[in-house]
Image (tube, rainbow, N blue to C red):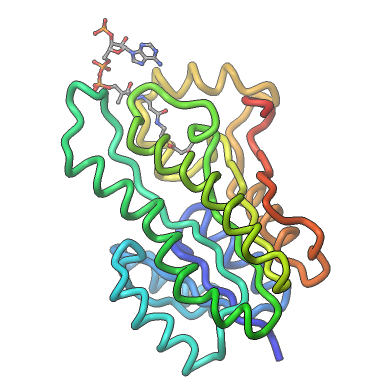
Length: 240
Ligand code: CAA
């Protein structure tokens, strides 16, 4: 039977490309989303991928969602923690709410969903977890203390959990995307974005599919010797 994959934030941007790549790899995919019903409905209609609305930063909501998915499709054996938001501004202007929102959604969600699926993966002696970090968690970014802290946290979380999962056949890896052509990056002021693109050696923004390819690779059944790694996919912008 096809393995069940959950992709958080899986109906738009990088997440949508990941959901499609995992479907093409023969997985039964559930794509979660938090807000944009219209985009999710269109995505589901176009791809035939099941979508589910819940807040990945809310532990109780995640618990209910995992129970529903398990009942309907089977245990989640592939988990892609992709959900992420930005609340960019300088420290001088950043509020506590902007900090909390980014930490809860981007990093808290990794705890929530790993916590809720890890036991099942241990029992199955199989699991693939991919956490989507960021170049800005590796290198820092002006105006992103919240986002850089959350993404950097994801990289540490990945290496710690990889050690716990290893003897149970569970791999835990991170991907650190660079600047990818999505709504999130298009929200960066044009003049700032042009300067960022000028620093990307391959000379372009990434495509969502560039990241999805990495997820398909890391979640393959035979990728069992790759764990605790961070795969940078950033056009050479930061070599880490
Ligand atoms: N280095 C040094 N100084 C900088 C700077 C930088 N990178 N960016 C801005 N500044 C300076 C400005 O020149 C300005 O200085 P002056 O007051 O002396 O003129 C000062 O900082 C404040 O700038 P603003 O008035 O523009 O402040 P703001 O609050 O309106 O905007 C900002 C600041 C939010 C950081 C804005 O510049 C911005 O959005 N930058 C891009 C942040 C970014 O890259 N986000 C990534 C989003 S995509 C993503 O996160 C996905 C991923 O994983 C890669």
